[in-house]
Length: 195
Image (tube, rainbow, N blue to C red; front, side, top):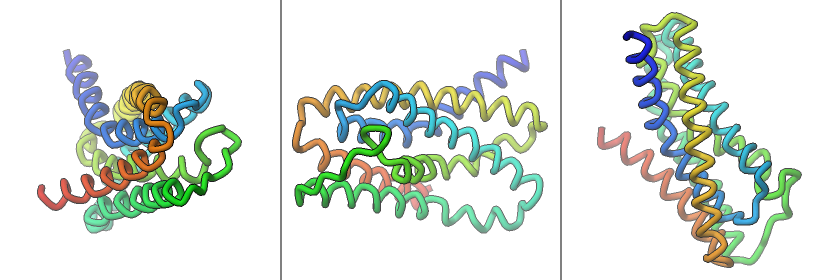
C-alpha cells in the first residue's frame, strides 16, 4: 500500500512540475512545426532530465546545506523569468525583424537554447527536494525518475500540440512562440509572488 501511495504522490508531483515544460514544449512546437521526431525526443528528454536532476539536487541541498538553500529559494522564480524572458524576447524580435536564425544540428532548436529552457522550466523543482526530504536516497531517486518520465510524456504531447498549431500559424508562429515563453516567465514570477 505504501508503494501505491508513493507512486501516486510522485506522479502528481511530476504532473505539477511538468506544466511549465509542457507550455514551453507547445511554444517550441509552434515555432518549429516541421521538427523531426528525433528533435521532439531530444527536447522532451532534455526537459525530463532536468526534472530528474533538480529534485535530486534539492534533496541533496536539504540534507547537506539546508540554511543556504532556504535563502536561495526566493531567487528561483526570478531566474526562470529572466531565462524564459530572454529566450522568448529574442525569438519574438527575430521573428518580427525577419531574422531567422540558422537551424541547429538538431534541426529546430539550438542546444544552448534548449539547455536554458530545461533549466528555466525545472529550477522550481529544486524546492521539491523539501517535499521528498523524508525519503531515503533510493526513494528520492525513484521519485525523481517518475517525475522525469511524466515530464517526458507530457512534453511530447505539448510538442505535438504545438506542431499542429504551428503549421496553421505559419509566419506568425515564431512571434506566438516567443510571446508564449515570455508569458510563462511572467506566470512563474506572479505565482511565486502571490503565494
